[in-house]
Length: 299
Image (cartoon, rainbow, N blue to C red):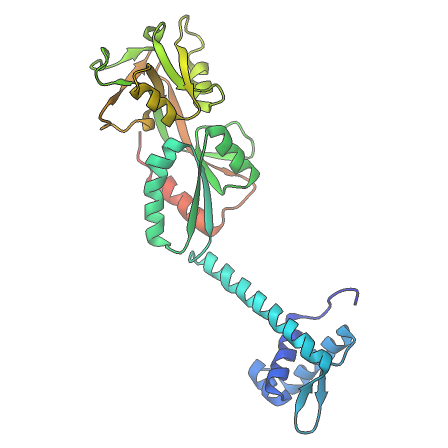
């Protein structure tokens, strides 16, 4: 057999006839005429090159080859039925998996609330969060590993849709007992000569900050580095210096640390939902995407 040239209804006709042992009963089950049923089975037998059914005056019985093929045909129909039900469930947002690549601060302060709303509406859908750096998150969306992401990178990518959801200022994070802790603002120039902790040079935050203050004659020097914002906060808590971090990085009620606005210049980052332009979101991913797009609070 060079190729499969029979239809799904031919398999269904064979299985129904074998199960009922009668052309009449099988035709009634499938809601077709007996001649139409016979044509379907004839077509299947010709395609396979083997007789599947023995017709007698009283009953229809499967041949030895027919019995063997019957098990395979049932298995094939079961797989197709399962696939159709599964796709139907996913289309109805009853099942499925959504993968989101979010920078850690957004995963903690924006995504978790949205997932809570999503879970209440669609409890059967699983959500996987890739909480990594901006570069890793962007690459995950571009590769198709993630359905969409929350990021401040990607606006320059031609195949990325960049939908702004929040503008977030960078702030100076220091201990509450620091001499500057009661100040209303700090100028970037004042950070020259101070001991600073910061994210590594591979971080998108570091690149954005350095680009924004490149025109300043005196700039902060990073003495201690960590790959992620959480690690930088730990360095500040340990008394190893101050740090410039995005506003979402530090909750306002932190018991030991305080965030102060930075001025001259004020430096912001734009958080956005990112997705590939050439790839439509599957229904579950679209539902979570829209919750984030509609429900994110303003800065």
